[in-house]
Structures are given as structure tokens and as C-alpha cells.
Image (cartoon, rainbow, N blue to C red; front, side, top):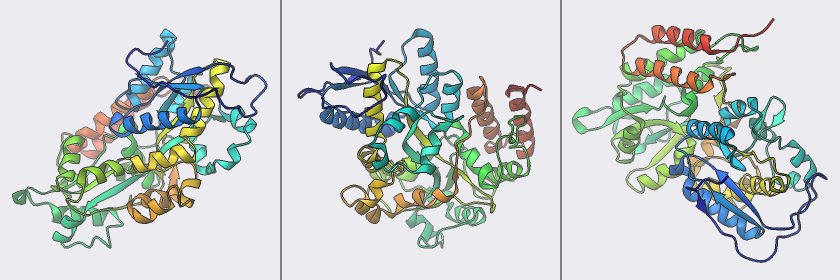
Length: 431
């Protein structure tokens, strides 16, 4: 069943082009096919998804893409699609956060894309990076293919950095340096704020980045015990409080912080590279924007890859061929080029960055967009807690972090309480 609130795109043109060789159970399309597609975060993806759908349909006139009304975030689209299972109204294709693939797979919702990749001779020419492709693999299945991939980075207002005695050409590489510079930037009398570390990002992403960058993990190897309460997590939670106490970070909402940054009133913002296109557009020429890597506090430090993957939900054989074509286009070199230019994400394909007609010139002229690519050497998976309580665990961790930022609890007390609550929601391992 198609959502009545979707935005409909009607394809024109001649008959469908000949299809690629596919598994025997996928017969060539003999009549037009309609696909329902759902995504989230319209502030970043609405215009982009509409353009991707339009471009795809121009190249595939036998397929019509119907975009459902977007959900606000990765939690919202997950909840929506879990409800869709009950009403038998799942979209044919959906773009979900990397960390929500596991929850969907545990309910046997996504179709394994590996058979489609193995049977498609074009795949070897799409430039899929094995490292980034692995981010769409869960429990041995290719549950998705990266559409928009990101890492956490730091954004700096170069003018405020210089005014505080810093050097935009030599930005901080450690958290100690970040905190010191933030404190120097803070000038309430001049209506200038210091920094904002966005701990609220969907799926506890920034909190995971703090823990992983300290060499920690969210759970132990066999997932029988919560691990973010161990020493790396204790250092991470204390650092979060240092942002408040020493770095003068205010307890404000992310939207407020972002608007302050756009207006030139905030010196440092920790955010996803996903926001880079938006930051560039909103700042305009108001001040120079410079970005830096997310500091690693341990030699074993890693960073969680963020972003979303294209997933196939339809079990209809005729639609599966069309769905695979759309996923391959959106997540391939052409769709990846459109996506990078519209956002700050990086593609799962290595081809666009190497081709002058795609992104080679763009990256040369926009060095801030290279920060995420240069962090590929330390990326790891965006962890997903097991079991039916994954969404609830996300909320519990967020609530705990809020008490640290608003100073209603001491950091270690808040951490221990959060760990205890999460432990209760983890599926118990059977002997």
C-alpha cells in the first residue's frame, strides 16, 4: 500500500531499456513498475532525493519512483517501518541509518543484496569500497549499500579562532587544545559562545565517537555485558563535563547552537560531515569556515561511520529488479556525486573522487570535504545494541548524557546509572 502523503514523480519517455542479466528468478520487466521509496531527515535529503529520483527515471523510463513523505530522523523512519510491517505497507526501498540495520534484520525485513551484486556484471565498475561496503553488512548479509556516509568532525569559525589567539591553519588536534581554545573564544559580553558538542545526534552517535575514540567499545565481544562503563567510557563522560565546566559549553538545544554558529556567535561546533553542505550554504560569506578531524584520545581510537544505506524491502520479484536498479544508481557514482554536492557526506563509491567530471575538482576546491575521507583509516561500525529494546536504549543513554550536560548529576554517577539501566534491557545469553 502506498502512503497517501508521498510525493509522486511521473516518468515519461519510451519503453524500458533492456535489463542486465539477473538471477533466473528475476524476469525482464515487461510493463512499467512503480516503486515506493522512503527516506528521512528532509532538511538534508528532500531536494537531493527528489533530484536523484528524477534523474533515475529519466534514465529508466519504465520505472516510476514514488517518494513517501520523509520522516524526521533515523529513529522515526525505523518506528514507521516497524509499524508498516503490521499493516503490510512497507516501502519497496528505504534509506535507514547504519545502526538500525540490525534491528530490521532481526525482524527479517530487508532483502539480502549479495545475490543481486554477484549476478550483476556492472557492480565491478561501480567503485564500491570494500571498507565502506562492509558498513552495510550485518550478520553475514548485505543488508544495505551506503548512500551517504559520514564521520564526526569539528567546525571552526576562523574569525573567532583568530580573535581568541588561535591559528586557523593549525587547528587543535587534541581535546585539551579544543577546550582551551573554546574557553578563549567565550566572551558573553560580546555575545560570543565558546563551543557545542552535539551529544544529541541520532543513535547516540557522538557519544559512541567519544567512547570509541578513547579506545573503548559499547559492549564486550560476545555482547553479554555493557562495556561503555569501563575506563574509556569513564574518560569520555568526564570529557563531556569538561566541555561544560572548562570549555564554557552552554546547555542549549542543537538547533540553537547551529543557528548561533551560522550567525557567527559560536566558535566551535562538533557535528557530522553530513552538515557541511548546509553549513556552507547558511554561512555564505559571513566568515571563513574551517574544519578539522575529530581528536583521538587513544592509539586504539576509532570513529563510528554515520549515515544511511539503501535497503530493499519488497519481496515482489518484478519489483526487486527495479529496486536493485534504483539502489545501484542512488548509491553508485552518479547518485554519489549528486549526494556529495548537496551535503557533506562521502559516497561508498571511490570513483567520483577520481574523476574530473564528477568530484575530483570539487574536492580540490573544497578541502573541508576531504576531512571525512581522510578519517577513513580509523572508521568502524556504528554500533547497534541487540534485541527489541534498541530504540529504548538510545533514549536512556541520551537521558543520562543530558544530566551530565545540565550538571544535575556528576559524570561517573550518571554513567554508572545509565549502564545499570541498559544492562537490564540487553537480551540474556543462553548457556
